[in-house]
Image (cartoon, rainbow, N blue to C red):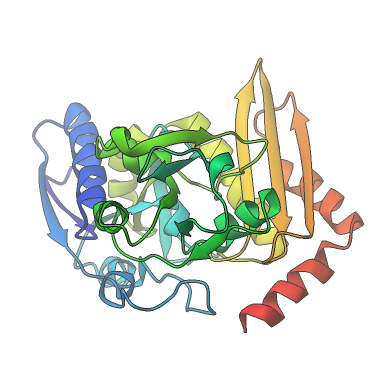
Length: 309
């Protein structure tokens, strides 16, 4: 059994929090394991002035870390699962996903106003096409502008008055204990989360069976099942993590449930469906994608493609 591993991670406060959480979980099972951390700046951390709602290359926040995995310069990579492309490289493997945090989106505002009280005179910051589309679906008059930077950077921009409100992932805010800025949690009926949102993924080189045995001990099976359904749905829709596609899978009263939504960029068109099964191992993305294909989702995806490109 190996006695040392190196974890690769992004440099943000949230990424480091997630990495130390993985490290702590591994230490519970392998107290003698020497775990080092290598901080890596990805293209997404460097090109902070580049809007994410364009046809950027996949792996914007993970590519440099994955390259270190492929060349065995690190042993483990820790990612926010929603940043990982759904097209998984054969040479790499998600060996574990930790128990999921809160998958919801939250609304933050400078003057503690709720989203329903915002008008065209208030400016909301988000770079996510999914969030933009769902905001515009709720209120076409909302004024939305891109905002880049880490969690604390974006909140600072709001406090300084550059934005009146922000839409962000609940899990990141909660992990950094910034809850005081949350005005409201956005319910799934109005706002479906990004596939994998709130989950921490642990990736390894797929050829490393010994490391797989170590890392897989911290896997949370229910989270793995649910997030796999969400990501499979996005993959079947043909969109990447920059697309206006939401998906939420969960287990309730012994049933596995998967909900999905695809929206036009302006929020005026949307397709939304829900499927469920008593078989927790079923790939619900197959049934859900059928429902979307029956409503000509391909036309909507092509429309999004053309607008992005």
